[in-house]
Length: 630
Ligand code: SF4
Ligand code: MSK
Image (cartoon, rainbow, N blue to C red; front, side):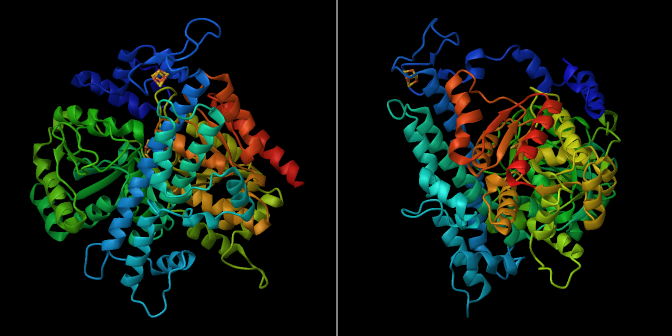
């Protein structure tokens, strides 16, 4: 077992030693067994899009095979593989949004799912041109949900939410012909265009990929976020705690893991059910302790303050504590390895989605029609399992940090309103934020997002980049596992202002916010798009003019490829701490990291060293400021 990756996090160190003692396997063992990764795969120059292959292109120019059997070059193969990753990521986010839209459609006064935020419902209905006068709330809800479901397959027109972008950005999309049409159509087009014998021009393949990625960011993800807010409430700032130390020794512990809030919202309700709480006491526990992981964790912490057990790399460690009665999963980012690992402890590993049946798990299908009933059944399974816990196998790390979470765009604006002190100032806008950026009090803003990846030391890149940025007066908004890394490092606290430059520290004090704002889950990157669009519109400029960047220091998923692509296509430079599988084509790499800027006003940067990455971000932000003359 290699412990090299563990230098950064002593919490994991202790648990991995326990894994060795318990004789169980973790991701680090599997990484060690994998030895060196496949060089062709790593460079993106292996194609198996037809059964004449697989065709592998020699990475040495002029030596070995330079074309696949059909004649596809490394440039084509790399571009096609990249586009297919975008399709995978856009499909995952958007299918999540489709499910949320179905839940919204079935919401009703007396059902399990209700409208919690009528204001947001009315706002989006207005944006989408739905007549609301004289209509009952649930009539509007159904009309809106139906319209959202059409966003996936409508035969004509483009995504409704594109109108949120500044006019200049919309113009760029139109001229490049990358305005996303129906979401499913864009994903299908990628699969079609990358089929054998279709597109071979890497520029054109990237444009097709950008259009699908934009269908994710300004379509699927935005629908997922906004409709979750209508159903479950717009997140507001609240305190919580983060890291494995939130697991309680004398309580029934339940881990919520995955991405879709429709199940976890019901589990939150079920865990408060007096009958189940009493049952927990009857089996000798002090109560029921829900803890979250990955983006389901982010969803429930943003809306209920549910404590964060950890991020992506910690999913096995949570089970390894020996104190987890149940791991309840929905979709995405769930290790199949959890089934085998749970078998070594008393943990019940419960999968719930027909889209993510996991071999070796207990499958309890979550049907929204019987949502609360199913949630209670699942919680009961966990509670009665408490008596099976083997105390000799329990090791709960003590580490946990306080954190403030819940910074939706509405909450951020609400905080900004509090510091507006002139009678003539306009409330409910991002003007105070843009003012401090223009005045140079803040140099700019960075969205730090994404996963963990054993190719880099877990959490180290996230935390190093974030600390360096706030030290240089760059405010950070974070989502996904990056936000959870920041939470564990104590960066989501008011006290973290002491790590900031003078300007950011002053803003934190005046506005009453931490320097790193937890904006939610992966689909909630759409909140960041909304925020930057508002700032750009307020200044009458395009998004690409703003001193803002996107950063994914430890990304790993196809969803992250889609996110990075739509962030760049939206005009925001994106810094990747893990190099994507594109380096087998110097041309495609150059398009991504250089010439794409001529089209969309932004590009990718690949930089694996977090310190160097932070410096490049700072330089780029200063460059943008200079161009703006501020
Ligand atoms: Fe080889 Fe072309 Fe088939 Fe790909 S599509 S496997 S490069 S023949
Ligand atoms: S959960 S996609 S590991 S951020 Fe959204 Fe974390 Fe990445 Fe999954």
